[in-house]
Length: 303
Image 1: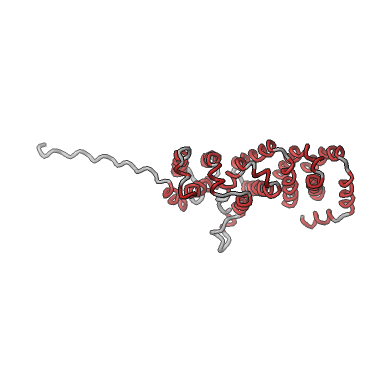
Image 2 (image 1 turned 90 degrees about the vertical axis):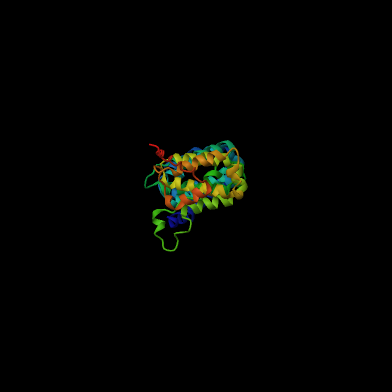
């Protein structure tokens, strides 16, 4: 795929296209948006789709004033294309274009997009395609942070909680078979780690968005994905240890921490690596003591 894309970019047609982009006025740039949107979603052939993404990237980088009015719409289209695209090369091209568009989009549509990505990530059906889709979503958030750090920095509440929890995603079943790497982060957790670190994630940022984190944790604990429950449990332990345990003592969060831990302890609620993580969870949030049955009354010696 990479070779096909490289060959298309080296063709005379691509050179002619770049010359056209250089002389287009603002009205002509706007007139290309509907056609670019159509090719991104329904384009036939990998070179055509990657070429359209390349055009969007160049316009977003070199013709900002002309493309800014259309940035929100194109960002939405590029995101849809990423989620529907099967080609890894095309997804990378779309993600690069989306990152440039995020720099031009207004905060409202970008925030709406990030919230919809979080919802899709959490509610993804537990199927064989679940892992690949979550990796695509995580990679998109990371690329948006790299391409538009200022815009993403102003919208941390809409993505940082998911990145914080995503860092604790378990290794995939196939990854667990890799010798000598059982204790390393898997592909999905590694992408989230990069997004979190590069986006300014730290203990202070987590504390600033504690309520959003707790709300997302509740959604994951109540959901159907064993992997996300495992990530939620590990994230809960991480939160409990931040700032020397100060976060779990905050009046606005203490009861929520306890309720989440109690839910994860339920015998009917299954999740990946439960046997290994449950002792750590109980150490952070000790379960209430089990009430002992009252001893039976002793008979009187006079009876």
